[in-house]
Image (cartoon, rainbow, N blue to C red; front, side, top):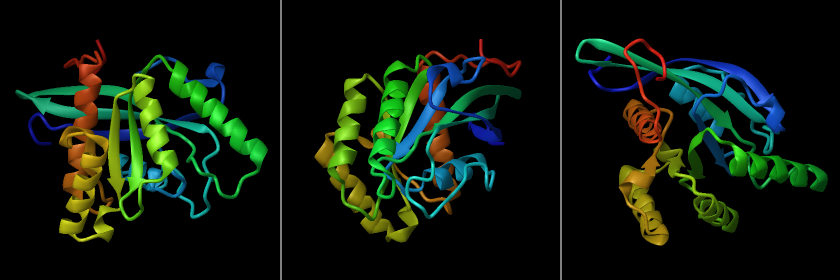
Length: 222
């Protein structure tokens, strides 16, 4: 492992939840992933954790219907010492559920909203956007609402390998200008590019550290 560079070395499914009393114990820092249906959330989580099939991938929009918690262990080497910490990745249902009933839409939006408003351990929200698609009103509304809730939001442009490098950078720059953000708030991602994986992992870990998660050489959170 490269000195000072974080990697995710272990991940496991913990539980699914739709109510606060179903959230896992003990509590850990949480990083939530959300986006439109079929944006590639499950594929990205599997890529980050290097666990094929960890998060279920489906071609059917709206397949994820609960908050799915995965416990992730991260490790890095610093000055010949090994540091480890753990946190939860939370896979949220996609918004824009084209093939679900009105009742399910309302139920899902309610428990997603409750989680995002009330989750005390949520440190970061990664909002995924398909780089090939235009920014939709629900993408923009969701982004602004997350900021109003006080969340740190990392925009992740998925499927970056589907465009040329220049086209992908142009799309990223256009979104930066539209949203008034800098490079630290947006990142390109492709499940086929290891460098993109390493960059996103280390952005996540930097934000967790900034949120008060202290890392100890004994492998635990202080």
